[in-house]
Image (tube, rainbow, N blue to C red; front, side, top):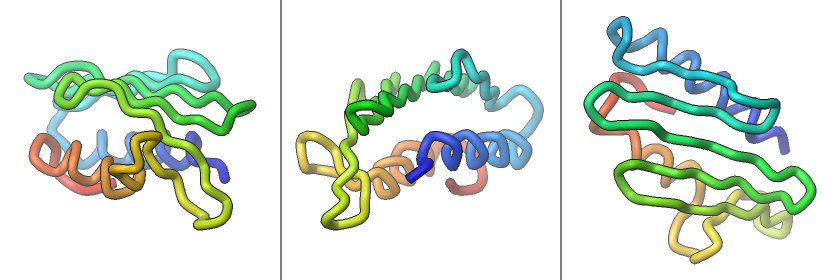
Length: 100
């Protein structure tokens, strides 16, 4: 599962769908993204490939980590509250145009 690359592409497309400067996507390292949303703050996404862990730091809801569950073929939060796609949709639906 190449989730980090998928998220990077999705955020770059989201950046194009919004007014200039509303959302800015920066790849800090090969495994880290910073998404700046005007009036909201910075979202950081970090992938640890060895442990198959994806960490999302949100100015809205704090830090969440997601683990790959091959049995269910999905990324699920460590707290078992969220599936990654659901979380990302809810996190960004009211602050940017378009969807991930």
